[in-house]
Length: 456
Image (tube, rainbow, N blue to C red):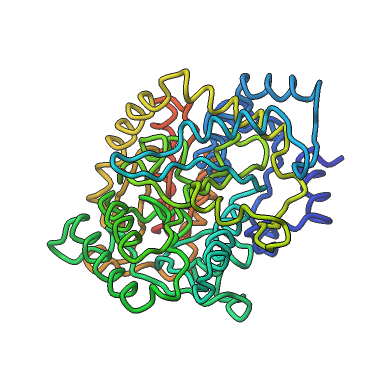
């Protein structure tokens, strides 16, 4: 008789098509059926525990099945499961919008206040909302010639067509290029791309100069610039100096274009501050949030914007200015309650303070790897850290993607009970905030073991 694990794998492979996966890989790559989870640990049907070093695609902020989120969901199920948000409302959606407005980034001397919240279902949908709102704003105020967007090289914003249009990761974009909008790509401030002798600030300033040149030529046709503040996550955990954000905000103001901050992956404490924008002391025109918003329990996203944008849509219906964008589960009460519970924990407990201590411990553990002959870069921003595997340290020449060395690290991690799902040849850590120093030690130890095996 087959084991429960083998039976589940067979059933799965007969019917399920998995995301971001070449299904043929599972002829040799083990599928891992999970039975339960708690804290940083996933528990397989095989009885083995796996440390979730990537927070299940960066969603699980506080740890799996945080009791406060679980209690909020159970309570909400006793009263209201769902109601459409067109023409109706409910307390969880109102409470969450009020809380998001309360904690939204603010900057001294900036009159912008993010006071309006539009809900959607996931990160890609939030980006779609922000792109459409920006385009539609300019149209509503009589500037319909503005139809293009500026995005950064190496950026990733999602895989629906609008979000994919402003993504510059060939693995995701190349196949669908004929279907996509044509944005203007600006050089990334990625500090890994610094020239010899340059600092991260120098690299940011060079990228800002290039952005100024693009805006001088194209601002008349541009709706918005979209950026992942501080960390370009799916593009390889590439990191930049906060001065880029303040400089970019100033450029967007100078040339009268919107700034969209995609904090879907980096929001809610990942970078050391509640929002990454705070480290650049900026307020974007649109703030996209998702992933950790519900603590990794249910899909939900939100786009925050200011009154000037909202006012451009506020008119008699006959004026044709309404934003007629919708999702069936917009503002779902269960998801909103989960988000409220998550934000309550972040407000009432010293999470960011603890994260700083954990981040310092992680930094100490990975620092010696900077001398490794096949690690081209060791980088970290808050609770996000990455190791860049290279074939040649002096030239930073990468290993051929076809060798799939990162996959070897992933396989070893599963054998040792740690989930390390790489981004190509970038091995990264983005664990839940409830991780302990001892679990960080295990996470790094297993990653180093995997790297050594991958280099044979």
